[in-house]
Image 1 (cartoon, rainbow, N blue to C red):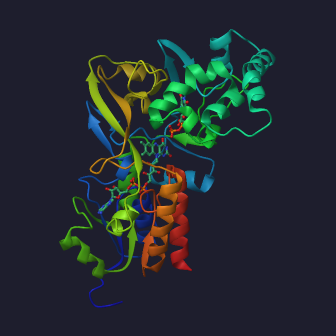
Image 2: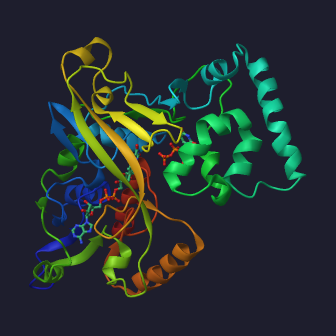
Image 3: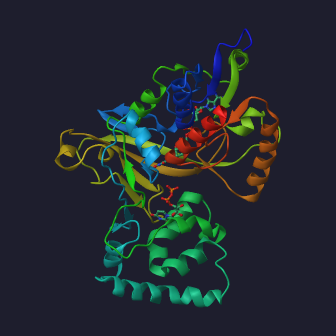
Length: 380
Ligand code: FAD
Ligand code: UDP
């Protein structure tokens, strides 16, 4: 170790990637310094307390995984509650259960058995399948119409997707919609994963637990000249910020989709009776309304707090200064990413990790898996 090197790792970013890597490294006796440009630790998992309720400031987060190692790992830091995601869709004032399941089909068509539902879906798909004439669906509209048929497409998919992506369904790639499961059972659980929940006491407890014993500095932007030179204090850099920013956007900027949140307090204990309500028509400009208390309080406990906090979500095109949320996986951005990755491969003693540095949409559990994998490679 060189004389100036006080740390094994300088970790830029205290999101789930940086925090998990720091946890694993600190636990193995490595010295880490974690810095984050935001005033808070935790990246997009950070929650703000409003009226005694944990408000998911950077978007609603539901932990779900089938990986027992990951589930045991997070539960060793903080216990998780029994929250099960079962969003409701509101189309012009009528409510439908998601994901598409027997409850949805009953509401749409009055069918009561799986056989009736299957017959109805077959009838609904017929026209679109004929129109394809044997070729593969070319876009999201064709994919959805041939998968679930016209009623579900028109009521639950078309306008929601257009609001979310800011483009027509006929101009979007087919693969986006493959993620929506169709179930012939009465089951409103959005995820198929074996484990899901929210940390009891909120996500900040998970982050604080992960970073316990690690030196952390907030309000510290790695690209400020006075902090950039901190690089020399560590043997290795773990960089979880945006990859194009690291290279000073020298090859151009990567595009993102982002979400804007309008959050307000309601002076009633229970606003919408569910954590997540999707608005699937163009009547409302927002895509979803989140009522945060339902992530952590259940049944009669919802009424203990006489107030509630709700956030409307507006899907928006990203502009500099906004939060980059979803990578745009079109040919221009994939090509540009490849060029940045070639530059990254030439950097010595730098690990590019996470959603921003890899320009890849990672859910939380895969982020932890990736951190475990990257730290595992450090030990080899
Ligand atoms: P981030 O959380 O973005 O952390 C990166 C950190 O780096 C930030 O704190 C940032 O301030 C910091 N940073 C960047 N540049 C610098 C710099 N120059 N100097 C210092 N610090 C810097 N996953 C699920 O499993 N379930 C969900 O329900 C879910 N919902 C989501 C909803 C939304 C709206 C979004 C965007 C994501 C959601 N995710 C969800 C994914 C989840 O947020 C990610 O898996 C997780 O945040 C990845 O962690 P990360 O550390 O890679 O990134
Ligand atoms: N989707 C939809 N109606 C809904 C919810 C989702 O049409 O009520 C579509 C939409 O195109 C979205 C995709 O399904 O982009 C994936 O949705 P999911 O909720 O799985 O992903 P997320 O929005 O969390 O990225």
